[in-house]
Length: 189
Image 1 (cartoon, one colour):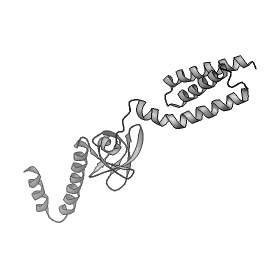
Image 2: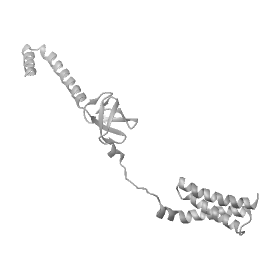
Image 3: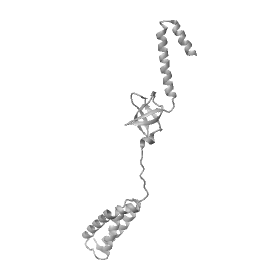
Image 4: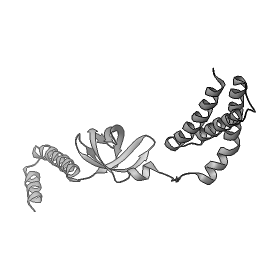
């Protein structure tokens, strides 16, 4: 390889690496480019003529500059960044989700939240598939939810109450006809 060509490779490569740093910031490509410019400059002045020595010089200069100056460059010339403490559980509280599998207090069902399905339980009652729920908090990997619209929960309670009343009516109808009349009177009032 021609000695002059290698010098131009170091010089142009150094400039290209420094330009690349503007596209891919991080501080490493810039110092590799500075090492290439220094090596190319030393070759241009005739201080380094051996190609192998030039590559070794470039590696050591680039590595040394990166280790020595990159922390300073990041500290004083670093871009805009911020550290924010995030609490995904706090952000999730109050979010509305869809029930995928029925959810109740005793056994975990499934809800769809942020594109994935999660285990969920309710604080009270049962939520059928397709119901909307509001996230209250998370217990390990299980979300605790409540119904958004208490109509589904009210319907379930009214069904349970009606079933209980009809069972008690059938039990009491066989014993005394007056018990049936008194339960009918209490329902109308």
